[in-house]
Every structure is written in C-alpha cells, then in structure tokens.
Image (tube, rainbow, N blue to C red; front, side, top):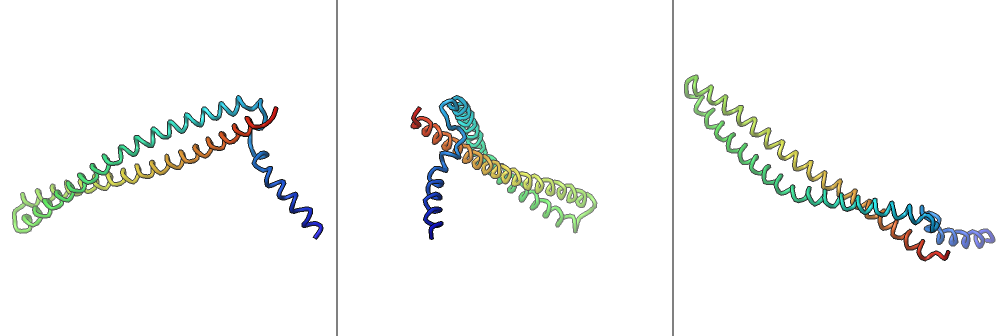
Length: 155
C-alpha cells in the first residue's frame, strides 16, 4: 500500500510534465531553430496544398478521357463484331477487314484500360498527398505548441 501511495503521485507528476520534456525546442536560444523549422514546414504545407489542388483539378479530366476511351472501345468492338459476322459468309477481303477491325478494337480496349489505370494512379496520388499534408499540419501544430510553451516560459 505504501508503494502505491508513492508511485501514484510520482506517475501523475511524470505524466503531467511529459509534454514539456518531450518537446524538441526547450530554451529561448532554440527559438531561431524553431522558427526555421516552422517556416520550412509552412512552405512544405503550401507546396503540398498546391500539388493536391492541381491533382484534384486534373481528376475530372482523367475521368472524361476514360469514359471517352471506354465508349470508343465499345463502339470499335461492335464494329469488329459486325465485320466478323460479315466475314463468316463473305470472301477473303471481308476476313482481312474483320481481322483489321479486331486489332483496332483490341488496341482501343487497351487504351481504355490504360485510361482507367491513370485514374487509379491519380486517386492514389491524391490520397498520398493528403496523408503527407495531414502529417505536415500535425507537425506545424506541434511546433506552434512548442512556440507557445517557449513564450510562456519565464526567462
């Protein structure tokens, strides 16, 4: 029982002072370093925000291109199918034309697949930039807390 009475206040004292001990910049002489890191993190946030904005603005364009590629691939596949139907009852020229249209349809389907991959890549990029931005904002908040602690610390 005596050890609990001793350990509990010691633990509470340690827990309450933990934010002070865990901060990187502790003295007034560290203010210059803190300000340098603060400016660097702020600039990183501005850069990440601009990259994220550009990526988000480009995403609808990727969707439009993918939709157009899908529609074009479907249209080409239908034309290829009709030509193949003609070739079954036609001559050698119809068969060559069917083969040509089949290659074209295959290529268009590949283009549509690539366009959809670009959408997924852009969405991953947006998610990655968002995560990086969140980390930088958390770091900026921590630096702001350290700055306030330094300002409130008596000299």
